[in-house]
Amino acid sequence: MLINKNKWIQDFGIDEVLDLVKRQPTVEVLTEEQLRAYLESGVELKHYIGFEISGFVHLGTGIVCMNKVADFQKAGIKTTIFLADYHSWINRKLGGDLDTIRKVGLGYFREALGISLKLVGGDPDSTNFILASKLYEKMGSEYFENVLKVSINTSLGRIRKGITIMGRKMKERISFAQLLYVPMQVADIYSLKVNVAHGGIDQRKAHVIAIEVWKEFGYKPVAVHNKILMGLSINEETRKRLLEAKEKKNREVYEEEILDIKMSKSKPESAIFIHGKEEEIRRKIMNAYCPFKEIELNPIIDIVETVIFPWLNRNSREFEIKNMKTGEVKVFRNYEDLKMDYKEGKIHPLDLKNAVIGYLIEMLEPARKHFLEGPGKKYLEELKELKVTR
Image 1 (tube, rainbow, N blue to C red):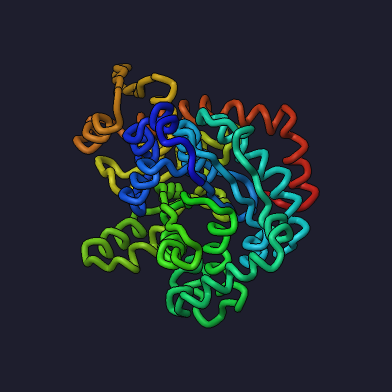
Image 2: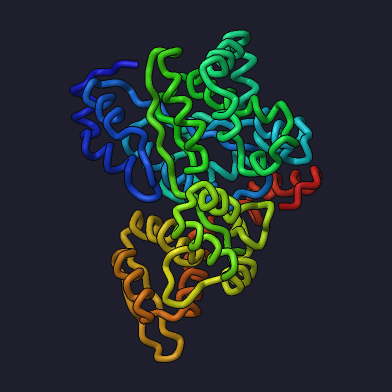
């Protein structure tokens, strides 16, 4: 895993790499000290992010996560996208049909993630796409040994806390396979021999276990967690409940509720899909909850901060918003200034929504053309044949 230290620092300065890894949409690095130690000692950084294979790719998966992958690429870090077919099977995705999961994974899902990576300035051709089952077949019993190493060194209580939000809600009704999910996820990191594990903040518990069992594998990985994009279907009642849980410092309730309202293809009105039609984007944004003067738990503000501004910054552009009553156009060079104006009531929610609609339509146009009119159309047709409708 060692490379020439001087060449690494010459091509990618340590502070520059750290800035790229830590910038939006990153919310946490476990730990920055370990990452710096790798950089200073000349260890080659190898990244991975794993995805369950499900239906349509939305802004959270396609734009937010791929934004971070693009940052890793800019920092000279080798990137891997792990298509987790067995994990998807465990969680009964796509009807629990493993053949369908694999077809979608190697077809539409891979294509959609690649197009998304292009949208945010990344290079899908420089990313290694790996189907989980192919890795396991290649490794044979070694992978099983890795799962056992993790399992032997982790309590049942920790495993239960690490499973998905849906699994935790099911409690005693979860399948035994769902308990295997976390040890498999941790084993994936070491089986791929990566030292940077990347995912949404909802993957934190599994990644912490991976860091804790490092002595079994001889090196300690770094975990990078990006923000989870809020779904458009949040309402005032849910927002009040979340704010109350936060005020009472009920962290467990707050974290579970936050995960429950994330953008999800299973709640299509909560999600903007990367190939969504213009009228669909317009309708969903216009119907979305957007409390006046409120920044926290506002899904439109969340999209502005996490999706639109990173895209504008990459293209050296500013955020423009037009007051529909006066015709005045305001220009914002950074998110903080826009946030302040919105908090002070200087921006009306409707004007903000109109601006967001325009930017999303423009940003997603290449994906929309690719899947609705171009070579990607065959993948959507395949989804229809497989009866995957969202």
